[in-house]
Length: 73
Image (cartoon, rainbow, N blue to C red):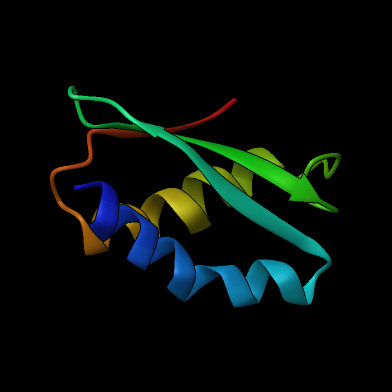
């Protein structure tokens, strides 16, 4: 599942980078929880929770249905 998540992140990474941010995969747990870390402009952005839920989380769950949750660390 790790490789699938990494591939899905590569698809959404350009849109984050266009705004000066990025996302890094920290961990994929055996329970299906994906932990990511926001970088650059995303790290301090007040909209990062919405980006996490509506952008990153939604895209990852669409590409990898086994994912139960996506959290920022």
